[in-house]
Image 1 (tube, rainbow, N blue to C red):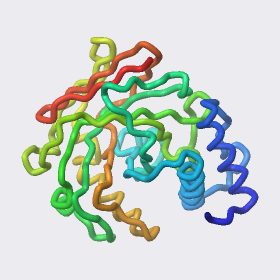
Image 2 (cartoon, rainbow, N blue to C red):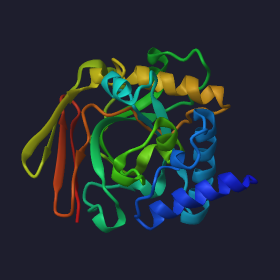
Image 3 (cartoon, one colour):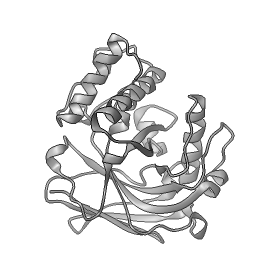
Image 4 (cartoon, rainbow, N blue to C red):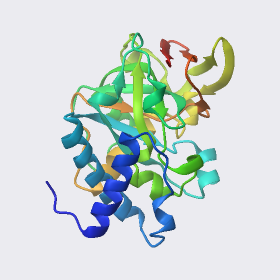
Length: 263
């Protein structure tokens, strides 16, 4: 276990207990406005170490955020971000999500990549990503920022593991070379009413490009994507809020559908 500074320990405890207790908190930059993005990724690492130990779980992959140019402009940034997925975050379509364990959740439609080979290095291309991918599938990611009113800076959200909490992957897995991943249309409905439409082109032009970006960023920090990892490539539309009793389904051209129910 990494030895933490007093400040790191304070922030990690603050964010970990906020998730554990399903309790919103004031963003950390209110107290520490000088925190940098590199320090935020360091805090993310420390938070994930704590989470892995306390929850007796394991890493299963990576999720990407801010992969939409519109969202980047809204946040005043010019690049995406990444966080990690743990085994205890994975839900099945037939397993209801428990609202009492969440704070103010939202759900996003994404394409999940299951890697059949490691990916590392700062020269990885989208073509390399597709070659290394064994299957792709439709997915829903539940995001649940621990920060009050879902308001935060880039530093805050990175430190908070990019609002990760739950994800659901559909049962249909297909070869990435059997479909045009750059032009997949999507319709997401809540309780039978269409809430969002989108396209995989919204994910940095192509979801494989987004994953290639993440490999380069991970490589700068001595990390990589590993064979067997699930990678959520980024939201294809705006997220929608949900509550107990809501049913969500996202339908993807050529990929099928994925659904979730909140109890």
